[in-house]
Image (cartoon, rainbow, N blue to C red):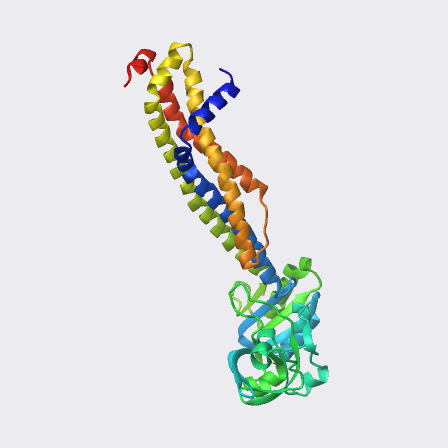
Length: 392
């Protein structure tokens, strides 16, 4: 019997019990759909994380230390490190009370210079940035993040209004465009940004700061510049070779690699869990095929009696098992893509079509059919015709 006849015979046999065939394939459908969704969501999550990390600035790095920096440190780094394009102090508090008339807000306060906005490429929607004179003369001026503006002023222009930051009056000179949530879930727009000089004098009560934010001329220079900064600070702070550094330099690339590693590990873990459904689905196929062999024992005997060979019987049952698993695989791929598409629309992530994961899922579902279908097929082909014909 040729392959086309065997395939038609297998389809005819499966068609006689459509509901049972569909239920048998359900485990494969769920398993393949889960794999497609998990791989897709993992890829979309990595892209979303990368975009969030890049909101800090693609060429950016942060230098933090328990031992405070001063403006002198800032100028020395700018002078001695070759590829720094922008550099700003970072001071302030994570939570401080802000008030406008009868509206209150708990917000973060950042003390920076104008390089901060250039590093993050953060445009204003109302008003303007600080002037150098305002920074040098400790002016009480403020720029609001989008969430802070909405909480205090709604959709009206806040420029020219007076807000109280920790009961100190500040003149609002601008507000920023929406930046969105950080990948940690923090609202990056709930922020009030002040000149770092004013923050030190009016809010912090100190003129030094524990963090510096910098960027380079290109992404290729980030690691080289981070190395130069480390060498410069080790010399300045007399850190001997082998001694631990009392400061930390973190680049956007390091943050991105860490975030991508976590996302990739989770995707592999979830895809592994989803693969268990495929194994369970394969066991279901083997179970139903064994039942089918028992039900069709007389049919097998008749076919053998009229000339069917052992390999014909084996191939027929094997094709039935593979048809069940690959049919379930195709349905699972379709279902997985649909659900993955709906999820990306709901959470606003990119839809990333992965032909590789689809091909792997299809081939794996076929392999499950062969692996779990072989034993029932071999059992059917091993029957003796006379015993099969006598079977009741």
